Image 1 (cartoon, one colour):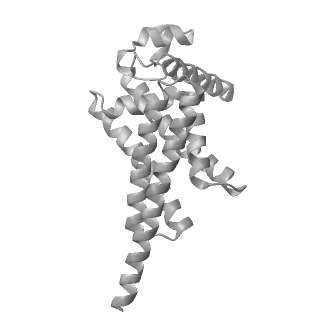
Image 2 (cartoon, helix red, strand yellow):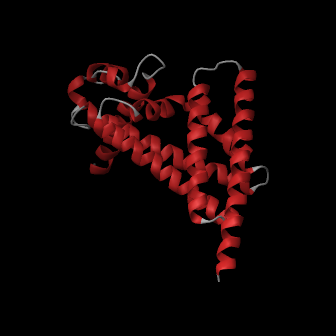
Image 3 (spheres, helix red, strand yellow):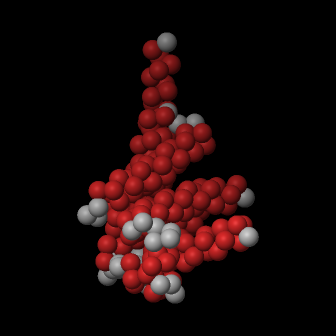
Length: 211
């Protein structure tokens, strides 16, 4: 019986999380949502909310954690597609844009709360983006045999560019415009990748000459 109750509790918790995400939009951020609105959207009484979250702030932090997890899963999904062959950068950008198109509110949450009024939310978003950047850094360092510092600079620049493109993509409905944005993003990332490879090679050569 306890197992059934646990499953039901998790299901109800999921309803609240999904209800909050579904109400985000270009005009509405998480800070504009009320507990009653979220509970109503989930089909629950407001009192049921407190069985799962102490307040809206706790729900918001949970959403940020989930958004961070989604980003890391996205990277792993891109790696699986890359392993089957194709351009690393192109596949990565296409995978990211697919997330924006299918689940843009997850990304919208990160963008909004990164500069939001809540210090706790800002810190949580910064932490999740840092995790994402460091995972990308590790991948670039291993896959391209880059100097560690150069790999981090490339990862940090790539995340900045992709997040900026993702922000623009949220407000684009036209398919051709989205494709153009993707192509521009891919080109920018390729410029950075070439620069990172050249800088890493120069650093390695300099270290060898010093021995």
